[in-house]
Image 1 (cartoon, helix red, strand yellow):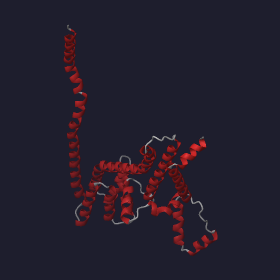
Image 2: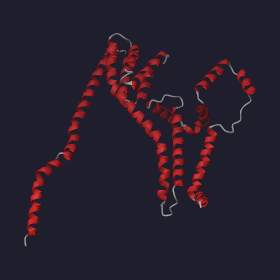
Image 3: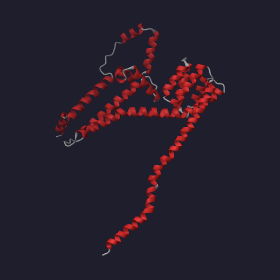
Image 4: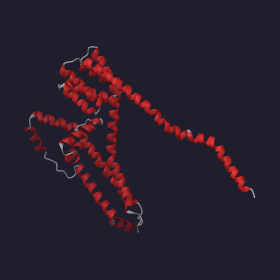
Length: 327
């Protein structure tokens, strides 16, 4: 009886889909784990390494030490797991950086997570459907829903996580930037250079605003590495995704271009940021009574009506009952 039921389930369209999915997953795992790959002759490898220059051998060895085994296996499928055009790669790379993932293979790992989790959800849905008893009255939608829901959840879960991380990081940067600007104004007014001020701010903000401190540390390290300061500041505005930081970068670039005092430019911009912060606080305070009105109407008016109108309604009902009771 059990064998007949299993054969009927396997010969059904859903069973064929499950078998195809299992076969596809097996092939993917076989390829990722490197099964069936031919091992090269060690003597041939040694000869190739001897023929290569010393600098290339050293760079290759360092790259091999940094990359893990899984990364090496995913390297074969980078054309499948990464966007095709350079614009899409740049946009995806910027999105991952804004979410706080600065790794070299962050985009590839992100797409691999979507693919693996989506395939895992598909397999879980198919397994759950296969274990359910056969019901001829079940519609096609009810058959497909247990398979589609885990697949969609597994596919969109990395997207949700990255977008959430990106939003939280941008909110943290926006909330900490006015304090960082005031500290930068104090440091430059005390006689420190702009590079020294940025380095000091990165150290001071590490406890309260780690995302903003990380951005300033990146700026400090890139300037110390010899990159042009204007290019580094432009990259800061692009990485942060914040309008205020982009305006701040524009102020610094204009100050450096026209030769004006950086301290005076920061003082004017800091005053504008304080006014903007006050306006945002006033806006939130003005919206608060409107939000409280709905709660007041929902939780205050019904009890008040019951207290005021309840006795009158009770008296009217008693009057009607007494009138109906008369002969």
